Each structure stands twice: as structure tokens, then as C-alpha cells.
Length: 170
Image (cartoon, rainbow, N blue to C red):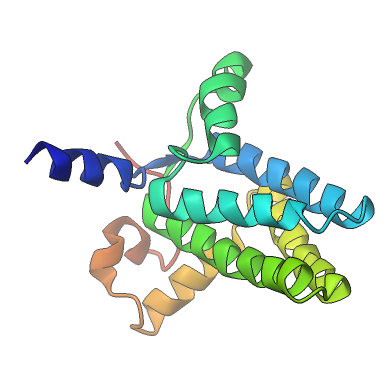
């Protein structure tokens, strides 16, 4: 029984999510993507992909960037938490995982570094919108999928009221 509990905790995604942390993680993703592209370091795509996969599976638990942001950076900033629903953020991390794994396969697996850089560029644009403006494209897609019934309302009741993720009321 204890193993199930550990497994459940390890693969849990936070709900709610602190939007301050989410935006700072996005800023870190921007820096890593730009470094990979501008320094012509395709291997960094593997690190970026690992981070997204780790975050979609476990939130910040197994993500070095997530740990740095939630345990070191945010506590030192003194900014009050801004809770937002977790399911849309997890969906967004899943989109980032799909795109970054694609970039890694292209750049590292197939040697198509330009194609990998294009995908990293798309990730950079989405992460920049999140970091700078608080506009989460994955959350917007999640809300759209809820509106058309692909994602059930039960996946995020707090999101369903207005068709988009809303700050946690409590």
C-alpha cells in the first residue's frame, strides 16, 4: 500500500498551480531554447524535452528547472502566490513535451538541426507569451477543447464556468 501512495504522490500534478512559478519556468524555457538555437547546441534539446516530460508527469518534482523556480527563486521574490487551475497547465506542459520531443528527435535523432530549431522557435514563442504576458497557449487550447466537448467539464470545473482557466477562489 505504501508503494501506491509514493507512486501517486510522485506522479501528481499540483492543483492549483502558482502562476508566478509557471511564468518563471516559462522564462527558463525561453532562455534554454534560445541558448540551444543561438549557440547551435542540439543536445540541449534533450534537456528541454526531459524538463517538459518531467513536468507533465510530476509537476516540478522531477524537473530541475521546476525545483529551482519553486524552491529557490519564487520564495526569494516575496511575490504572493497566484493560484490557477492545474489541469490546463498540465495540458500545456504536455503540448510542450510533444513539441520538445519532436525537436529532439529531429535535431539529435535525425540530424535535422534546422527543423529542430524551428520547433524550438515555436516553443520559444509560446513560452515568451506565458512568461511575459501570462498568456498560456496550451491553456487556451485546453479551454477550446472543453468548449467543443473533447475535454469533459469534469476535467476542470473551475475552468468550465467561463470557458477558460480561472484563478482559484480558495
